[in-house]
Amino acid sequence: MIKVQQEDFDVGAELAALSRDRHQVGAVASFIGLVRDVAGDSELSAMTLEHYPGMTERQLQKLEAEALSRWPLDRVLIIHRYGRLLPGDQIVLCAATSAHREASFEACAFLMDWLKTKAPFWKLEEVDGEGKWVAARQDDDAAAARWQTDKTNVKQTE
Amino acid sequence: MKLLYFAWLRDRIGLAEETIELPESVTTVGQLATWLAQKSDGHAEAFADPNSVRCAVNMDYARADAAIGPDDEIAFFPPVTGG
Image 1: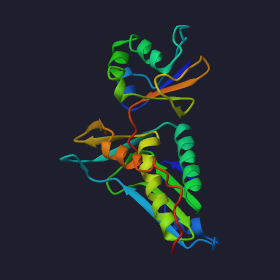
Image 2: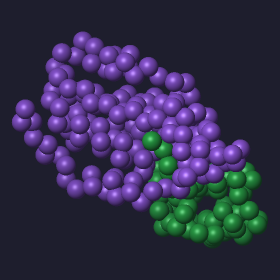
Image 3: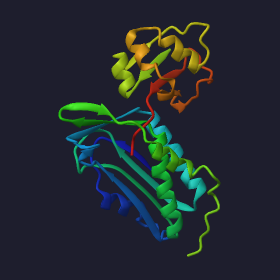
């Protein structure tokens, strides 16, 4: 399930809904991304997330389908916010449910790594009243690249 | 043809979107970027470094050699920084 929204989300309620009445699920792995109060060496006052409406949903749906095809998952959830956020605010929630933990953990890491290089969002950091676009990180490209090998043979050993 | 710009490309060009008449000689994403760079000083600044510009054709990522037509929605933007 994909949600691209301005409003905040309730992690507990979202995760509970993901596995409610799904008794085949034994593992729920999740990641929550927050706005930090630093931008380089400066104090960040706010961060505005811009996105490409339509393409964002399309790319996240492709990402969800890719995760479901690579691992034996029950469900995938990605919630990503846009608009002006403050330090401490939640930006993104990513979760994967499955019978066993290995698939959930791996799928959750995969979703975040690919999201960071494929979902059309751009961060504008506000420092001392000035806005500055965040540059893409090579670390993120490297993190995403590690999933380009064949990862479809995840064993269920637990 | 409808064009969309995001993040600092939009700031430099001064437009979030524009509609253009696609010249017959422009048939790929790369040719379009080169042609757009001549439109204004802002366009020239936005497209100055091809390595820092990404493109989507009809909401899917496209490379410089991707074919384009007059009915396509084309977006130009910097490398993404979500998550």
